[in-house]
Length: 579
Ligand code: ADP
Ligand code: MG
Image (cartoon, rainbow, N blue to C red; front, side, top):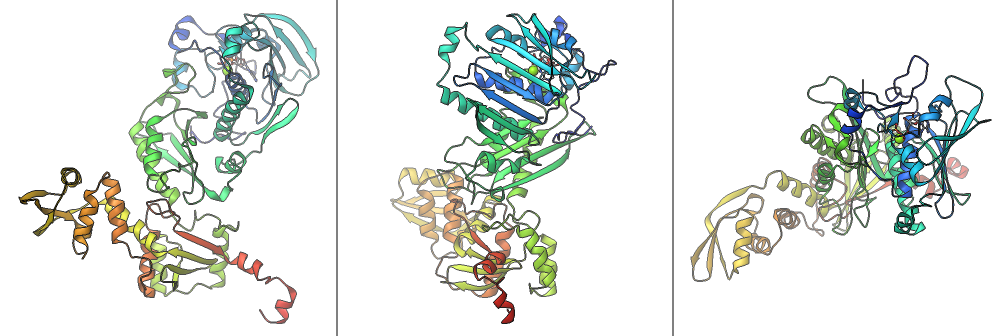
């Protein structure tokens, strides 16, 4: 079994079919109930939506229509899933009844989103519940409508004409629970939470089509995508699909032979970020959950790629063997226990590096909406890119994009030719990125002999240098001997200034940024073509080439197709002039 991202035709999520050809709903035995961290009270409209949508997904639906009334006291979710037989309709709202698990052992291999058999029953305690359903198997040619009383017993039953699938209708929500009703936030706030819930589920199940109506008007619509990357521009319309990168890694975990998977979408730091840290999300096996350790890995992995007041956009979805997850850490399944956490952490760092790299396979579309990868192929066919054979081989070996330095502009920008256009790279920050990552990889201190002598250092400056690992001794009246210095700075004429700057505060990372900035080639410095090429190649090899450690974008690419469009090269007169 592979734990792959699920598509609408996937089969590993299919609950076990019984001999009758459909899933029999049964009451869970008491000893299983005791193992479940249940008791969650459905206290919000978003929780109602989540529970109903998760049921639809477990029934293999790929189309969802949600209707909300003005005050959100009626919520209806219609799906095109497998439907519910009349027999199952009669018992599905009773306490602890589920078709998804039966025994204690099943708890170790949960592949469905629900398994506690509580949601429908809880809904009957807080609202009026009606379910209309027509099962796909056995095909009866008709549907049934069932009304439940408080407690989940059927009070009325009728046959109706209906397409295969299910409509769950919840009305008079919290009507008899004034305390809970008054505790609800404003409708607009509740709608926001519902929207967030829907987005999270949609990203975890990108193959779904969503239509959500509020007061009979289409309020939210999401088209299906093959990957979560395709959903992002629908969810965050300020951005385009090319502002994100997506990868999906197959992973073999220790102990099992089945493959797991890691999916990651990241907003490219020079294109897509947020003013708050609300879009760093993690999910596992189809459900968005808090995985604080991995969230932290994402945050620190993207540190020094964004300006201080910006936050990354990340979506990390793990697909793994259900026995490695314990859903019973939290009643709403919002937190879990996950095995192999440090392994996943390592894989996340690796995936992050890969997603942020500039390479021919993942190079994003340019600012002009053309897929650079495709153009690159065209460019190569035309043979317009000229490098010596050895240069080219070398480039292929390290998987660099074919960028050739051709000139320098204002002693500040490197102009590089690319088979599909031109790129401008700011020399100082590209070089700063290279040096910063070298320093991050090895912050090497080296003995300084004879020592560097500094005067007038305050106590906090002395302590700061010590914190950075620099050896410092009192050397006389108001004088100190600096016996080790960062290796990269040692040969510099401004070593003294650099050490004083480092003594002025910040953590090691800040010191590394300051050192990189100081050591990088200044703007205004003339460079030869080989020097520029060296910067280009070194910069492309960095882990995070999109932005400098302060978060400024490093390059601007202009597609040849855009130039062609601008210069109207498609005009017929062009041909007669031999262009
Ligand atoms: P759980 O999802 O934990 O099993 P619920 O109370 O949410 O518990 O649902 C009870 C049962 O009702 C499910 O196990 C499933 O068999 C059936 N069911 C609920 N909603 C749907 C639906 N939309 N389509 C098909 N079956 C459903
Ligand atoms: Mg459920």
